[in-house]
Image (cartoon, rainbow, N blue to C red; front, side):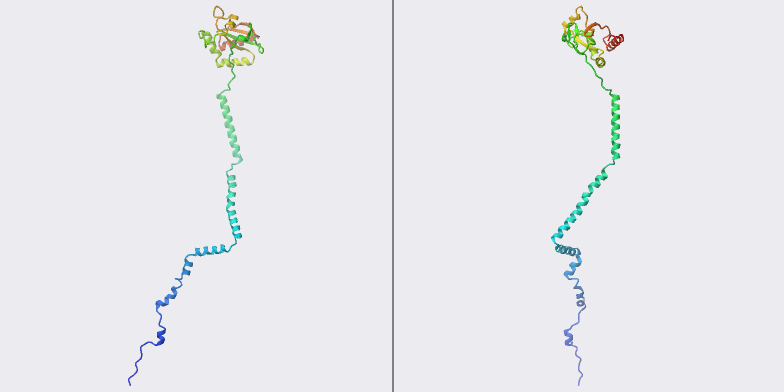
Length: 257
């Protein structure tokens, strides 16, 4: 009887549980990495933190949110309000600086005043020579209710309308000089001497009354000394500032002026 041949076909148990391949064995290890939930949680931690804060905020009551907002605003405003006093305190100069500045300004003003006074002397008072009419006289006497001292009256011509008299022009120039006006102001204020003029081409009758005319009488200009309103004598000095000053000094020395 021939021997039995061993069967080479797989058994039923082997058919039901086939051997797993290496690729199949590795697939379970990759499945956690491919999970959608796990991948997002690993790649975006900020988003999860934000979601957590939102969830926490959602759980806070409106009263608590108002208190937190008020405290945050107070922290932001407090430094801003405290800054200006510090800035003002640092910007304010010391009191000694103000004192030094005032002293410097006062010294500069004093120097300017002293220098200005030296370069520009104070203007002295001047007195112009007045023009008299016949109303200033009563006959041959000079009317004066307030002054009874000495006066020199010049009978002359108005050179603006008649320039033919050269001595009259010269006397007009002298009486308009600043130095003469200054000296006359001194004599006038001290009641020493007063000077006036009469235009004979405008006051012919008055000049004729005193014997001053261009026809054989006293020539132009004719200067006469009056004292106490009455004529004393004719002036015989030079018709210049120096001549008048010399005449005043002479009369004062004689005790008659």
